[in-house]
Length: 104
Image (tube, rainbow, N blue to C red; front, side, top):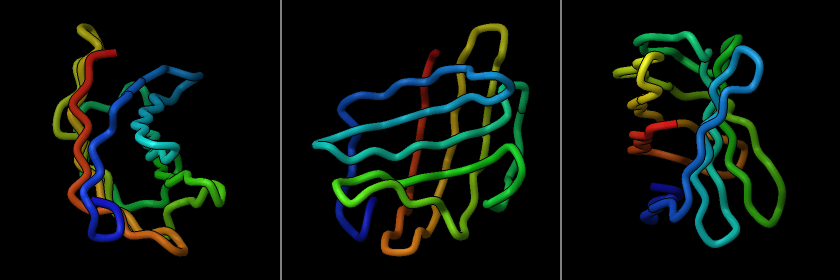
């Protein structure tokens, strides 16, 4: 949910870049980007924090999370599968009830 409106990504990607796993979900020119350490197993992490991040991107640009949580519920680095829950606030947006369940 973004600003109290449903948000269901039509395209989802996940890539390991350096020591980070970057997950991006996009729909109609808007994107949510979540970053976690590539080797993380499970954690409930307040953000912002080193190695963790969340961003909302729209036609006005990219906004970084000012506060929120990323919960890594499950991450299997052998099978490259991760389940993440997230919620965060940027300067002008509120993202709640976020879920990313992805094979990468």
